[in-house]
Amino acid sequence: MELKEYVIGKAKDAKEGARSLARASSKQKNAVLIKMAQALNDSTEMLILENAKDIQQAETKGLTKAMIERLTINKKRIQEMSDGLIEVSQLPDPVGEIFNMRRRPNGMMVGKMRVPIGVIGIIYEARPNVTADATSLCLKAGNAVILRGGTEAINSNKAIVSILRKVAQAEGIHEGAITYIDVPDRQAIMEMLKLEGIIDLIIPRGGEGLIRTVTENSRIPVLKHYKGVCHVFVDRDADLQMAEDVSFNAKVQRPATCNAMETLLVDSEIAEKFLPKMLKRFQDNGVELRGCPKTSSIYPNIKKVNDEDYHNEYLDLILNIRVVKDINEAMDHIAKYSSSHSDSIITKDYDKAMLFLNEVDSSAVFINASTRLNDGFQFGLGAEIGISTDKIHARGPMGLEELTCTKFIVFGSGQLRE
Image (tube, rainbow, N blue to C red; front, side, top):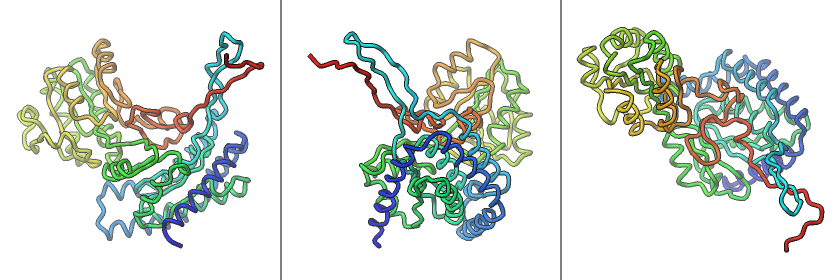
């Protein structure tokens, strides 16, 4: 079978799955998710063995440490996938929600109903947990999902999909509701992107190159998740111990994620007091530091930062540091270099906190908290399908509601257009 025919066949199967899934009750969907969670836990050893094949191939190919870290499955991450499925099962089902009902002068009632989008294509790299996260959210929101993971995780993804499909089929869900494109040829992605009228939405998750390729070639609407160039600004009125702990967490806790801090901005009024201890803590934990001239004068023997560095999403233990005059210069820097993903201010000053909250244009803005918290699970959405940096339809972590759309509904009693 030719690649084009293969992809079209998979997509049409998903279309049938979407029609079937749209009729599933909340009770049925929740039961399926709970059994999927258990099945993943029961298959822990098998999943780790399959993942080991991917890790070995990744190391042979010389993939970066950050990529291998994203690729790795262990007991903790399998448990997190399972927990995500359980949490989604416990969330309110958005499908069928009726809201904004109002009576018109002619007596008819007009409102909106929340409905599934239909067939959602997920194109992603590395992280096998996306396979479970995307499936759970799409299923609960009544959507069929077409998964096209990266070739670097093919063994892990196939194993996870096999487990989830078996549970779904056993519980009466059409097999097309969870569809996986297991062809490593990148042309399979290009064929997916042509299928307007069958696939309703494309969500790419991965590096900036993947996302730009998808956006430039898709005939289907795309919800984008561009790179995460995230900032923490330590204000002169900050609690410095809090600022140290938040900054450390934002960079070091898991540096290969899109919500990890890439640039630390520090108010000049407290820079000499704050930076020596902070930067030593970073260096003691393996962080490569790149500082502006003022930073270097306070803490010598670090690399010099250049303008291009401020645009970088390192996804690694590398950090830019810049000393700024005040909150306004910090916000100017963020406006110029931020990717509108996650930005935080550490301050005890309410007025400055609210100024930052109102003026910084990112998908999530934090006051006295780590950027690492920009996450669907942390926000109570259950496992997220991605963090959108778009402004249309969805922005920020995308949970169940973001995977639905609405239609107008009208209750009449014989009204006619005059």
